Length: 152
Image (cartoon, rainbow, N blue to C red; front, side, top):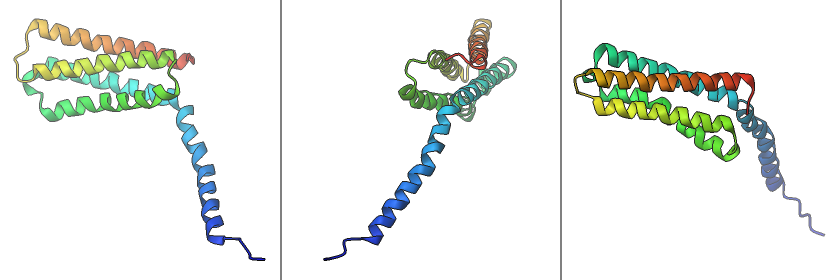
């Protein structure tokens, strides 16, 4: 009788199984930290919105550079990616829907500031920037409170 034991193949299978056992809990941690990660996105978006408003009101749109807009857009891009990942896992989450609204409003603020680049500020534009920023901040704070309360 011929020995069919293949040590190399068993070794590879064992290593793959070991990797799966190690990585599975690590991947699960992301989903346990979902609320914490969502809260971090909210905090960053709120800070960046306030920073954008302050910069615009103090310096005007003529001082906004492409690198400023990239810096403002980056949190939006990361939050959109987070929403894409979470949507597959928690499609019915109320928090996910509310976070989507905050992220969309922040994206609209950044896009609006981009359209103003190089233009002298006027009272109506200033008022709209303040309104849009306040909208992002208000929605962000309401959702942060919801996350802190443990709502799903």
